[in-house]
Amino acid sequence: MPLTTTGIKQMFVPYNGKIADIKEADTSKHTLNLATVLGETREIIMAELCAVRVSGTGELRAYPNEGTEYVNLSFGYGRTWTIIIKDGTQRVQYAQSVANDDFDLYCYGYVVEA
Image (tube, rainbow, N blue to C red; front, side):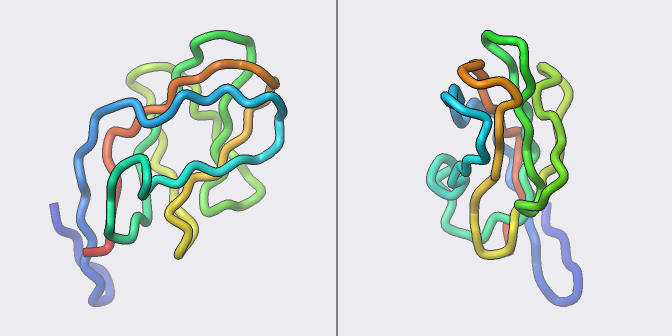
C-alpha cells in the first residue's frame, strides 16, 4: 500500500514471521539490523513488532527512534507496536528488563521509503 507525504513515497510491506530469538546475558541496550533479517534493500522507517516471552519473568523493551523512552514489546500474540526506526540506521534498539530471559521477536510488516 503506497503512502505519500511531502513528496516522499512510502510503502507498507506485509511480513508475518519470527525475525529473531533474543536471549541476552545482560540488560544493556542492543540493536538488531532489520535490513539484514528482513532481506530489505530499501530504507526501513517503521516496523510492526511483537515479542513473545519463551521463558523468564521480564519484558522485552524497544526504544523507538533509539530514544530514551521504551515500549514493552512482550504482550504476546495479537498485540503489536509500530516502532519508528532512527533515520539511516535500519535497526531496532532493544533491551531486556531481566538478563537471560528468552524472547521470540516477530515482525508483521514494515514501512519503507520507495
